Every structure is written in C-alpha cells, then in structure tokens.
Image 1: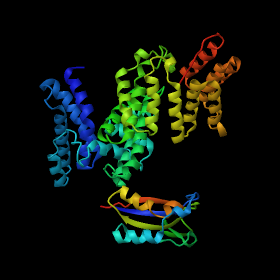
Image 2: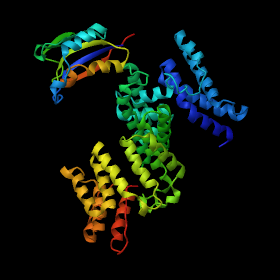
Image 3: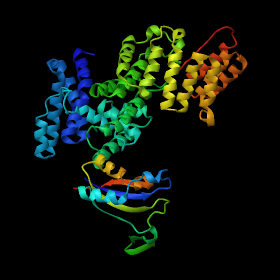
Image 4: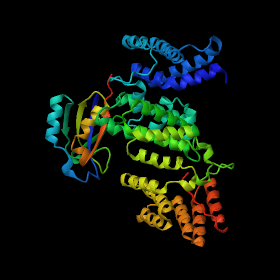
Length: 410
Length: 109
C-alpha cells in the first residue's frame, strides 16, 4: 500500500461515519449520504497519490463528499434550504464535548439501532452506514446473497424514512431505555466476528464502535463496560487457535501472545464501568487476562462475579459458566451441584458445552470412565469439527494417567 | 407526521390488567395537547361488511376481510413529530396492555 493509499484508509476510517452522519442530517437521504462518502474516498485514492496528501485529510473528504451531494441535489432541483445548509457543511472535526451539541455519529448509531427495526437489520445497517463495511462483506457474514442484503438494507432505510424514525439521540430516561439496545447490536457484531466461523474484521469494527460510543457518552458506565469486555476478549485473538485452527482453552493458550496493550486498556476502563452485565463479564475476562498462568487464576474472585452475574442475568449459559468457575474455586463437587442447578427443567439438554463441563468436573472427581463417555457424547453433539477434535483429544488424554487438565471457555 | 393507531385485541394480554392506564384520561390529555386528531371504537366484527368489485360486479361478504383471533376494535389518528413521540403516546394507551396497537404512518405529500 502506498503512503497516499494508507492515508486515505486512515482518514476514511476516522471521517467516514462523520461524513455520512452529517450528510444524512442535512439531506435526510441515507443512500445519497453513503454514495457521496464513498465517492469522496474514491476521489482521494485517485488524487492524493498524484497531488499529495492534503493537510487536513478529513476536511478534504468532507468537502469532496459535500460538493458531490450539492451536485446531485442541484440536478434533482431540491429545495434551496438544504443546499444552503450543505454549503455551510465544512467542519469535519468532532463536536465539542460540552454543551448540548450532539455528535452526528451518535445520532447515526442510535438511528441505525432503533428498536422499530428488526435486530438483523440493525446490525447490518450499523455495519454499512456507521462502519462503512461493503454490502458484499455483510452479506457473506449473514450467509445471504449480496442482492438479498441490498434489499434488506434498502427496506430498513425505507422504513426509517416512511415511519418517521427520528434522527436523534434520546435523552434522559429514553436514553437509559434505548442504550441497552444499541449495546446489544455492538455485542452481536462482536460475537459474529469472534465466533469460530465469524468474520474477524467485525470484531475489530465492534471494538472501534464501542470505543466511539464510550468516547461520545463518557458518563454512561455500560459503554465503558462493553468496550472493556471487547478489548479483554480481543486481546487473546492471536492465541486462541493452534496450527490446525482448533480452538484452545485458556490454559492451553500461549499467554505471551495476548495483547498486553488491549488488556491494560480494558482493565483501566473497569473503574468507570459500573456493575452492569457487560461490566461483570469484563471483570471476569480481566480475571483471566491478568493471571500470569492458568494455575494462578483467581477463581474465587471469578466465581463471585459469576454469582453476581447470575443474579442479574440468570440465563442457563451464565449458570453453566458459574458452575465451571465454582468447580475451579471450590472443587468439582460444588461445581457439579451448580451444574445440576443450571440444568434444572431441561434448560441445557443437548447443549454440548454442558456435557463437556460435566465431563471435565467428573474427570477431576476421579471417575475417568464416566468422564470419557461424557466427552465422547459431547463430541458427538457438537457441529464444529475443530471443537469435536478438541473434545476427543480430551477423552483420549484420560486414558493416560496423572495429567491434571483443566479447561475454561476460551 | 400523521400516524394511524390500529387498536387490536390480543390472545395474550398483560398479566396485570390493573397496571393499564385509564382510557378517558388518555383521550382527554391527547385531545388537549393536539396529539390525537380523531378516533373511535369500532362496532364488533359481526357488524362488518367486506366489499369488492370484480369484473364489474359488486361482491359483498358478511364479516371482516380476514378471519383472525385478533380483532381491530378501534382507531386513533395521531399527529406527532416522529415515531418516538408516537410510541410514547401508544405506550400510555390501555390497549397496549390489554391488546396490541399497530402504528401505521400515513403517506403525506
């Protein structure tokens, strides 16, 4: 990549959402805003290598996009007012943090994540409009054709216009009500990128968007908690797989390959993250991330955070992870008791990780024969081939004595 | 913007009907602040007549156009700045608890 092309990529990543958001605010036309922002990037790729990188790359892009929008609207003979407002649109810098001036990008995020849109549409629209991810890439991640994704995005934008979804950041109690929905979209985006079969770039986008949200809403604890959670998980991305691409459990990972800068940033955010569900998950992740070795993990602390998390979000999967933590903190017996509690009412029937946890705890209790059968059953139940291999490997290890294996969610 | 509130019954209403606000108060407040343009309850579906013209012939059917468990029991026409304002109006309506309410924007030129 040439220096100029790199400068376009850097300036684009920073300025794109701001340009799109500003153009939407003035013109109300989502497609026009995206097209003009894209065309500004294309123009920069053509001109900067030849003319040099401008002193204010973001400002250059904003001006190019604005001029393009003026051209298009002039041809469409749109009202004078919009053109006048467009002509004044020059400042690509973030809005000052004080006062009631709201950053355009925040408006854009809240509109893309409006609960009147279907959840999948919210995720896709956020990727397309705020993060500038090409439609073809989003389509691949959602396992649909590009034309289907184009239709889905068009339908979402049409609904925003036709239903009068406001282009506004809610305030007061409405902000508290709407913020979790925005965070849920980013969380889904992150897990889509972090899954075994996910699109890794989405995880990076989710980190970027969470950082933006935290910067724009510094007084809200949950965006800080979500960003911390993302960073602490993201820090392990280089160490999560072996040479065959199989997922490694935490104790098997090379901790030297964990990203210490991301861990430090995530841990530092915890002070401002409050004690909501994302913050609690982030504290758990920090407990793992800051342990020098797997054996030195502070399991009683992690078990305590899981107790708190179960009180707030008593889902079967959270209860399952709590059983794992208690198993390490207080022994396999208490772990198995909590596992039985998590399974009450058949909640985790046919869920392979529950079988794997039972197998692990049973092995540590000393019943190797039963543990092997459980690992085998878990391997039969998983769909992903790498996970199946990992479980069979664990079953095989039990035939060799005296290895005290341990595994925790990676 | 104008929004049509289609007020509908629901087979699974809110478990605590006493939590629902009072309808008279809802109407009085929205009439006073201009959010409610007009509205009315409907006579039951048994009073409905469905009308079609096909090949120039008038066809009448006794009953509503769709036989469903849920029944539209009334409407209100709202004047609101945007969807969020309309949602706030609807969440304060007793039938949001006892039934469900569809918000349909009007196409305005």
